[in-house]
Amino acid sequence: MRDPDNIRQIDELGCVDWMGFIFYPPSSRNVEQVPEYLPKHCKRVGVFVNATHEEIRQRQEAFGLEIIQLHGDETPGYCQALRTLLPKGTQLIKMIQIASSKDLERIAAYEGIVDYFLFETKCQGYGGSGQQFDWNILKGYQGHTPFLLTGGIGPQDTEKVRTYLTSHH
Image (cartoon, rainbow, N blue to C red; front, side):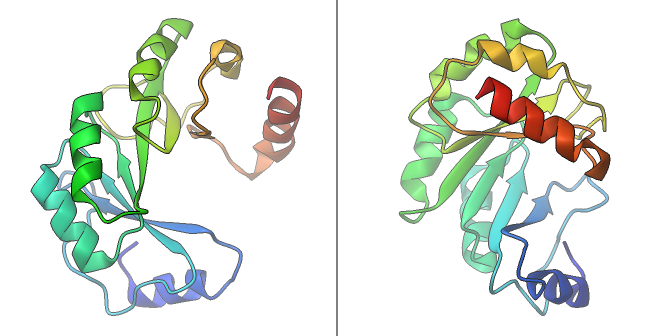
């Protein structure tokens, strides 16, 4: 989100919980400066890809970020060190690319360090593919960390998501 009017309109809807700001220069949605309006009702999420701790801390302070989404190759140690630098209560989301059940194996190392996982369809680079992965892979998820599901999900998938979540979790 970059346009102040758009941010205000979405914030004032009253039904959006989180609003994301992309801090990844190669992205066409990269945010370079603080907009004239920042959300007052939605939690502010900063999305970073392999950023330095200092860069994240500076953006967190400037934008009042309440949630940090790590969308790159960040290790459990990196995440643990970052947590100690952020204000108490700041939540961490770690994106995990999924293509097969083998991809779930590396998740255990992040347990107790991050607040959420974001399961994304595995693709080249750090952006989304717009494609859904086989959600049946998640039957093998044994973790205790809540997860978010992404990857090609649209309004037409509402019933599929509801059915999947209620029957598998």
